[in-house]
Image (cartoon, rainbow, N blue to C red; front, side, top):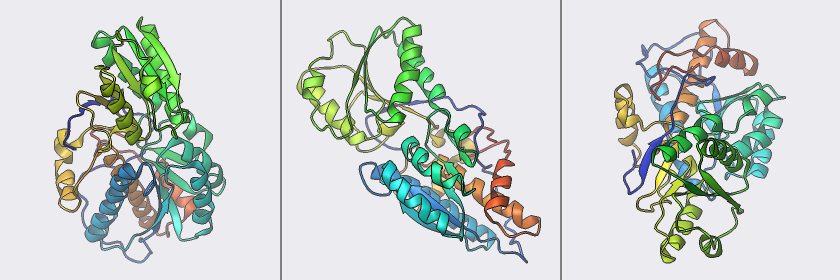
Length: 349
C-alpha cells in the first residue's frame, strides 16, 4: 500500500478474540424512528512523534464514517482526541470523553501505553473502546470494555522470529525503546529466537535518544539482523543512517511502528500486525475508494476501518431493536460482533 524501499513482512492474522466488521456491501436503507447517528470518539496520535501513523488512522476513520453516512443517510459525528502517543496525554483526554455524554464509543487509543492509561478511566465509565493498533498481551482482560482489531505480541513476536530463523539467523542484535509496547514484542520475539538456537544480544534505549552512534558501534559484524521493535519510525531512520555511516551492512528488522514513510532504510524489513489489503480481493474496492480521497496509507489504516465499522454496525443493531445507542447497549452490541469476513481478510468476532 505504500511505495518505498522497505520489504514488507506481514504477521499472520488469525480469528482471534478481536472485534471488526464485514466488508460486504450494505443495503443502503436508512433507519427511521430512532436516532441512529451517534457520536464516536477518536483517540489517535494525530500530532507528535507518531503523527505519520496517526494521520493515516484518522483518515481511515473519517473515510469509514463518511461512506457510512452517505450510504445510510445518517449523520454520525466524531470527536477527535489527540493522544500524541503519550500516556499522560491519553489520561487527560479520557475524562473529557467520559464527560461528553454524546460519545457512545471510542475508536482508539492506538498504542498499548495509552490504552493502559486511558483504559483505567474509560472502563469504569462503561465506555467501549476499540484499539486498532494496541498489541500488548492482557490489556483486553484488564479492561472489559476494550476490544481490538489486531493480534497481540504473542502472535507477532513468534512470526517475526520464524522469519529470521527461516533466513538462517544465528545472532540478533535487539534494542527495545523501554515502552511496554516495545518490551512486550522484545520478550516474545526473544523467547522464540532463543528456542530456535539464536543468540540474542539485548540493549535498551529511551525514545528521547537521538544519537545511537555509540550503541551502533557495539553491533558485532557477524550479526544476522538488527531488530528494532520501536514506536517511532524516525528514530529507526536515525539508527539505520548511523549504521551506514559505520559500515554496518546488516538488515534492520522493524516492528509495526516502523511501518511509516519516516523509515526508508534500503533492504530493511517491517513486521506488521495487519495485511496489505491490496492483496485481499474483497478489500480492493475499499482501498481504491480511500485512495481516491487520501494520498497515502499503511497497514495502520485498515484496522481502523474495521474498528470504526464495528462501532457503526453495533449502533445500527441497537437502532433495529427500537432503542437509541447509548453506552450500555453499545457495549453489549459490540460484544455481539461476529463477522465471517472483514477488510483484513479474516473472520473477526
